[in-house]
Length: 344
Image (cartoon, rainbow, N blue to C red; front, side, top):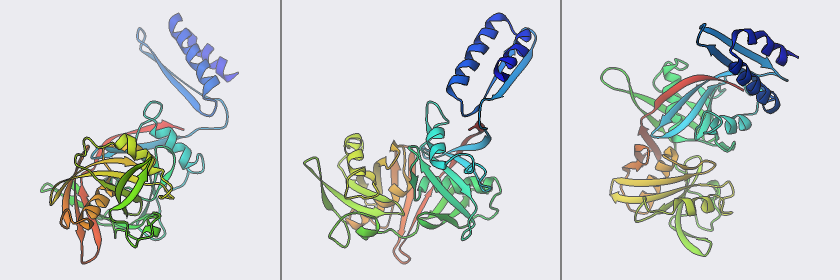
């Protein structure tokens, strides 16, 4: 009844053609989006009257605040759910699929949650656009660090973050004017033991190991930066068969938890060019953990030294592998795109 009462109450303000549009829009919403509150604002330009109708069809809905960020083209939707009010309303897996949809949602490579932690300053959780949860994301972590510092959730430039890949330490870097210039992240130690990546192999390290993909022999180096990576060296990253081989290697049974796939061209002894197929997301403009894995793999294969600039489609990252601590460090930019509210 409320649906039809709402229409009748506003018809007096609107021309006939606006009433028809309003009736059709609300009727479609009523039949299709039965799980939410649908709202529509109509402006009568002749009388400058605004009409805002919101009706609840069933259950309940809530509005959430989000921030869209990108790190060299890898884009994410950030949500602060430290009170767990969102998780009580909808599963993170479902929400990620809905929000990351580039046609019917906000659009993004993944959804990242800002959460409280019992063991670190904050907790970071990331869900891919297909709804699957990943252990870590390097570009996402830089954006995470930038955002929590700017919003004054954290008021120190170096802090600890709990992830499924372990404790991560980001550090905010400033320019001469005191503005955030970049974020340097201690990505921890690379994992080379195949069983821990996980990757099925009889060797102690899967360096330049042969895989057969539909009758084709591919040489890969398997590395984990908290999430699995298959690094393939190619003559030209721009001509690499990313769309063809990426999904096949991602889902190959030798990677029981699937894998990210990097196609890496060695330019000089301190410069790499990379294309990436991300697990659960497909082709993306950048992958921070992938850039770290590419640098580690290139060093293990004696192609570069202990540091390199990695050129990705979305921009550049500077990667260092400190042999004394065995930690990998990644430095790069992060930018806020916009903030907004969305009803779920």
